[in-house]
Length: 188
Image 1: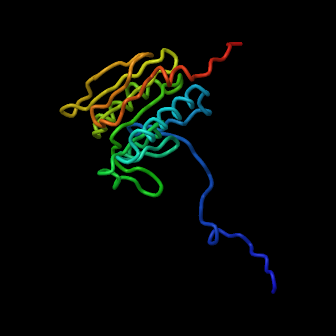
Image 2 (image 1 turned 180 degrees about the vertical axis):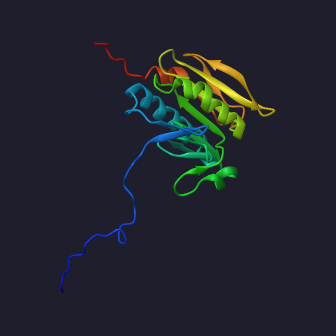
Image 3 (image 1 turned 120 degrees about the vertical axis):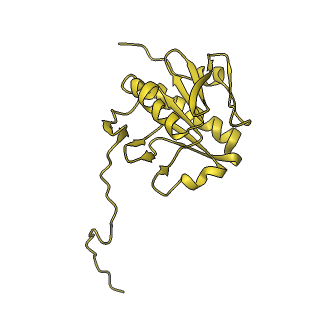
């Protein structure tokens, strides 16, 4: 049995490993900053787990980094997305092309303006049915619901509240359970 060494070429290994992290919002490229803070990532994980535990049979929940492309000028990496089974056709091998049913963004100092203003405007325009903005410092969730093609603030949920979804009856998320798990770090 002979063993031949093969030279790795692009033909044998066609994948491009250059990883760029950016979002395209209304035609403007925004470079993704350094990795988010621990608290941010904890919230992403906790919300993902709640959706997975409560609503997995009814759809698919994914977390960043995952590209969601709305059109040529708008491609984002939301923190958490939920797509109902009836809309799974928007999921491709590489990205989501179209509007997920629910998007959750955890605010960060470097992205909050985009999350609250620019991305919210795009999510509304392309028909994301629910958009949740989670504030990891003040510990609340703003829940926007699409009504007549416009977002209305359905509710602001605080530390001791239970988030419910108008879209998914399976959603009942106890925020105290989530927020009480957040690590607290001393400031230097």
